[in-house]
Image 1 (tube, rainbow, N blue to C red):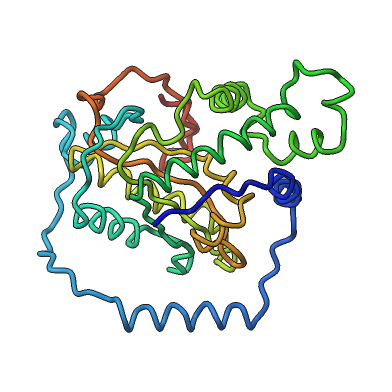
Image 2 (image 1 turned 45 degrees about the horizontal axis):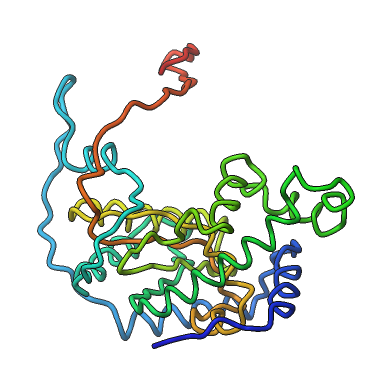
Length: 289
């Protein structure tokens, strides 16, 4: 499968302007009913009885070594260098299954997963992202002329794309625009996470939890992953929106590059501790790290 990058830059920029506006999330009764019907139909056609033996879990004693689950969480590192080797389909399916079982508000499961392995399609998507990153960086780069950064588009971008205005995001945006930073870093597969805006509570949070399950499962298999939210620029391409199934109620939340890592990147590294406010059983407040 191959999807060509839209050649009409003006139409992409117009779509980009539209996507940065914030709209109230209103869920009608009919939309909720439709969501329920979709879930019921999906369960009837795809539900599988997992052959899982139930075992009683045992809490570790103080001073015990970390268990396998904890080690996977502690050792996971973002991977930005992948081997071109194709992943077996069953491994990807296992990852997605762990995502499907992620905790979520009301068991609403407000997500959809799209897997892309077609390297030509991935390269075309990357080319579009690089183009749009360059366009966006002209408006949110604080080093640009004041007259430019004070216009309506720039102000709107800075309010709605706060993650990109952050020094880390802004630096990454500029690197992507220049081609100095890869998008999916040569990964043999990309998993796109879509959010169903009809979901209960905060569906974006639920999708993040599902993605975390997928990522941790991948690392437990010896694979590597990297979360790539520059994928949001694909929302500006009509062809890629169609390919990914975007359109109400589904929006692109983020993407995860996955594959066999070059070298052995996983491992525990030093990380700054954070204060935790703790009220004990007697109501005494303390701070722990």
